[in-house]
Length: 623
Image 1 (tube, rainbow, N blue to C red):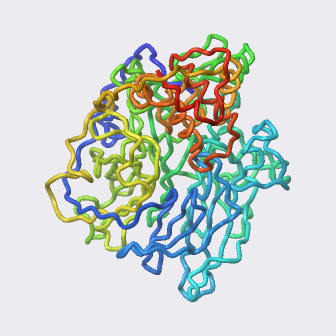
Image 2 (cartoon, helix red, strand yellow; image 1 turned 90 degrees about the vertical axis):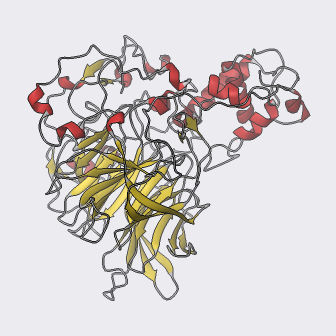
Image 3 (cartoon, one colour; image 1 turned 60 degrees about the horizontal axis):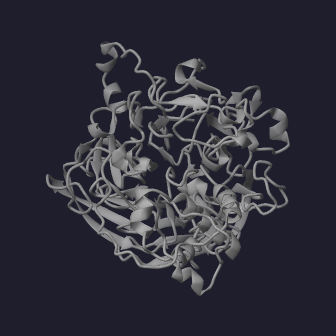
């Protein structure tokens, strides 16, 4: 998949632009308006290990999953006190988008009916299932990684979850785009989102996207769920397939909708309308209404079928063997087939809104981004969404809206809905702008209090329009209480909304420390490059500067942060990676990866190897 500069095509007839709601559904980032309502911010709790799902429970507690902490906890919203309901030892979280993810509470929990059930979706090693054929290499940490849905029983007296009962196992999981949002529907079914596994990009660019592939009846009978990637599933409470699920390509399976990229948001309205959100490639994060059996277009289409700033590049089908190609996020080799969105003629369900759409010719490599292009892209990084109604006593003006959390932009976007909830009506508003990654959102029962979970780390837009990896409220649950109209809408009294592109914050130049130049061999850089591409590229990008989660490891950003520091400091920092499994590689592999990074930043290979430890490391200075 690629967002590229294409010749501008003829503008749609002006009459289309006059249609109510459409103009707000497909606009560039600068059309989002700064919110004018006033909120009071409070940190409920912090230092959580990757809070991923927050949901209000019938016990008036916030139920939370910790992605890397592997715990389901209950948080008192008044005091921040935490109670661990269960720690799941079988959760496996080797990377940045796996671990303990979705959570759903049975609507009869604590109602005395005996249905005191809690459901969770998480990744786990399943050696009985056998290796994932796409995870090659005997030492690959994702070789036996699969998603599963498990039911637990809650004991109110002990305040503990127990009796784990697997309902559905062997679902696709990998090192990227796992999705994993889980909801309990009004039809008493479970709904689960699964991503496209990050195929066709970064370290997985030679693997085809299978969001359009539908399972056969033979695969369903064999419990081969490999075709479930890029789908939304509808599941009976015992894990079986609902008899009224849509028949697709001649088979009835768990698949409810298909054609998705990385759908991390899922929320029901009281009337049963199911809203979903998913990450776009470089533009067009999507907000959708899910309908049974519908195709949402990915990877042929990102956002609307408008041929704007996106073409589908099929790297796995290159005439040159894919293994011989170097992935590039902006330039497609001649040997790689590609197609515009208009070439895909099958019926699709288009989004109710995109965040955001830009015309062909948009510069996705603006010099203003200082090598960190991801921050300048028009996407916001939708972490989740929540349907909101004020119910007459909540936040004025938010009578019917979607609350959308932004990871990259550190904001809450409010999308007003037309009566009936089938379309966005009026401008999109931006609230609570901060240097955070907003992961999930939940409205309190008073409808005037909004709770937001934040990531413990990563990268986000800084308040001056650049990029930061220092989070303002890492791993926290924040409370925003409505106080009235007028005043700032931001979390920290910041300036008004700016365009996506902007310079990096000014950083005082560090006095360089005199020291010996780095020493490493060409063999180490070759080994380090291979290790980097298989273990690090999914977060930091294949070019060391095009990552969408980790900070750049080359170019101006890297030099400002590391020039003049010792190689030993860089090596020690590398050993904290990946965040979910620090020091999980051998010292030799970490040293080889550092050698590759050093060469990419101008250092020259020589005859002496870079040691994995020892005092010599602190005598070498990064140029």
